[in-house]
Image (cartoon, rainbow, N blue to C red):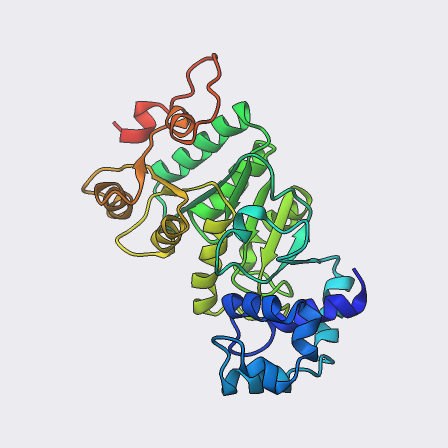
Length: 312
């Protein structure tokens, strides 16, 4: 990628107060990402949704020297910057109106493969949730070994899903809520290192962005947008997994949830998703195959044992 073009692609994502939707509109009206930085104030002000204050931000940001620091970092650390118009940008994510204009990718994976699912859940899983996640992903790996597993590298179900994918030789992607100069939580460093070799770490944030709470809400839309379906494994009454499920529904993507006992604190979220028709109930890989239209194999049953599900 020519250095000048990369500078513009990164630079447009750093303009204050200009989100993904307006960025796409700017590029469409100006004809190219470079055109946005070359346009004059009068023409910019005529673009729908771009008022005087936003025009000021664009004009004042035309000095792209600060972007050089970002380019130096991603070059030094072998990070790929994927612009939404680039060939390698995830096609499923591109279909989402508010998808990031640019993604920073550490690692190498094929985002546009046939089967991509996101698995999310509580940060405080029970043994039931952990065992369910491991066995479910193990079954996917046995019969659909090219499936990409997406999650958020958080404590709980997220890290359990990543570890299970790696153990079963599946590629897995972690969507981060911060820049790639650090890792949160730091205790997941070893897993993240493996993922760079067998998947990727991705983020929309510049390299020095800290893990602010608002960033994790933003990253949830990427988890939902990358996948054909989002699967929730244990969730309390509130939490990021439920936010991700709602975003996936807004993208018209499939959402599934594993049920739990009505008395269990970390089954409340999943049971409510199912009860309110915001998620389809699944118990095993057979259900996922049926609901997603994956080709059924004439092989032995892949059901998770009732002992695991109900903890009898």
